[in-house]
Image (cartoon, rainbow, N blue to C red; front, top):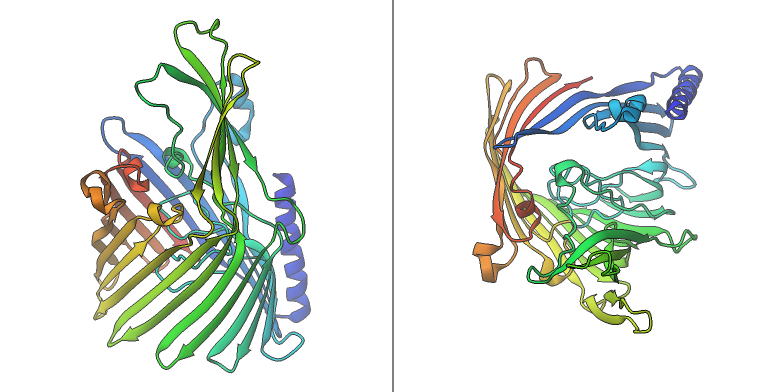
Length: 462
């Protein structure tokens, strides 16, 4: 922790030197927020505790710009179970510091209209609202699965060449692979399916161990590249993109079943399971657009995912007798010759200055891969403002999700999330939301349907 704060102080020190040399102000802004969530029902419990200071720094000098964003957080609740934990401040008072972005930009480098960004940066692609199938350069930040579209920054070299005012070409190189981080707390098991045995068997799982097969840390092998052509023609913004990199979520590619000596457990068979997870290369072709038709904002984007190799799932069942060879089965989970398409279309409209409606239809969520696994999502939100925009009400906000149209009654989810916010002063927002979940099946939101909750948030922007 001392090293982290020392690094922050060094950054501020050098920013101050730049300020003194250029006699231009260093812009410091950000927000202080709290996010508290309480599960309702018979077993009410505290589900989320986050207090965040988001500190942003920006310094412009001639044709250059320095930018950084740091999160300082008290995140989580104390999780102590013995006396030794009371000596660990990280357990008693959970705390972390994240460098979300830290880069510098130079305009007109080498030639006119060529901009260069180097450092940790959030490179957001796509035109849809929060959920973007074409946004695949930065790793997904799935810590909070209710914060749709959140990504972490990537250490990258980012070049953009502007052709007049309506066209640009962008090239991005990310030298190191960064995986997506998974949900925490009550949402921890929402992404990956649990490993279960048939209910009628007398075999019980003793322990599940996981091993992750990472991409080799070699130049090129570990890297991601992306290219984007963006244009504005008449009233339409559109872009074409290509990404060659890894899927940030691993696939389950091998399971090894190890029987335990029946002398230890004579009344039932017990096994250990070793699960191997692997990351897969993929090519992604993207298209997105946005326009305005008689006051209605319209957007859409689509991404075609093509795997570099087949995704296989092998199961190795070892015999309890050493002379009997293991039983091996192998199957293709995803065929590289069968690409799959994720897409989203949406529209919004402002009714004067006081009310707003937003609707989006999406095919394929972040964690869904393969044409047969893609679910359909319909999102709808309507809100309006009162008291000179000091009171904000969203009585209609939620989603309908269908995982299998052939068996809708057993493969669906409903999400309802009304919200009320109050702005006592322009810089402060106080909000109260409620999430109601219902559904059946193995879909993401069906898995967390037992966690209806209140969300209490406050934010001060400066």
